[in-house]
Image (tube, rainbow, N blue to C red; front, side):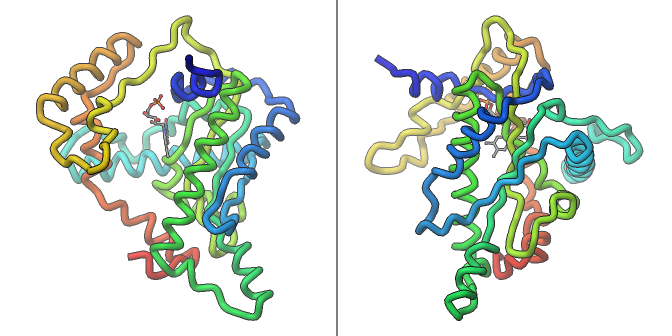
Length: 274
Ligand SMILES: Cc1cc2nc3c(=O)[nH]c(=O)nc-3n(C[C@H](O)[C@H](O)[C@H](O)COP(=O)(O)O)c2cc1C
């Protein structure tokens, strides 16, 4: 019964073992055009992409991302009283996706609407509101999902890179993002090495995801959580990689308010996003 599109979505997995082989121009163009055709809030088109393929720029980008990740790990370790963070002088470990031939930065972009608002003789204010921030982030997410599915439809692998938000300023500087723009997330795309039988990462049960007619706040019971923790440990064992339960996994990120996003957002002109 499922068609090819549904099979593509149901087989989603993030892939990081890139071969480094370049993507043909016409394939990359088709992927990007899929992003450009996505819906945007009120046709505001508040998204731009920065497509990075130059090896030197890619290296500098991944080094900046690695520094941000290391900084986050140190802060998290201190905050949670763990000894796990890398020492400040540890050699930078680049993310495995740094071998991908293409990195596409998805930018929430209120620069273009500001140009149009000014042409209409007025001043733009939407970027000063949580509503504007939400619109940019939602549209970026739609773009991310679309680029990922488009890449996978060509047999390529893809992984989202939100880790760039640990320290976005060097990325803003490197890629020349003007005021009223913000790097929400990136995506690495390219040919990948795959295990013979790829294993999908488990998800919480449907009963905690799909709420018919009315949200059920008790859907995630302690038993379901414990079962899911066990299922995730089985997954790590099956793919032969170290990993934790979901309960442990959500601790480091979900126990901080990540002030750096707001600080850099305000610097980029997104004021009043408290
Ligand atoms: C917005 C977003 C940001 C992400 N950022 C990263 C990242 O920085 N590094 C990474 O390795 N994976 C990243 N991922 C991938 C998630 O870790 C992955 O989707 C999750 O573990 C589920 O695994 P799956 O996609 O293989 O099913 C990101 C995913 C999303 C949607």
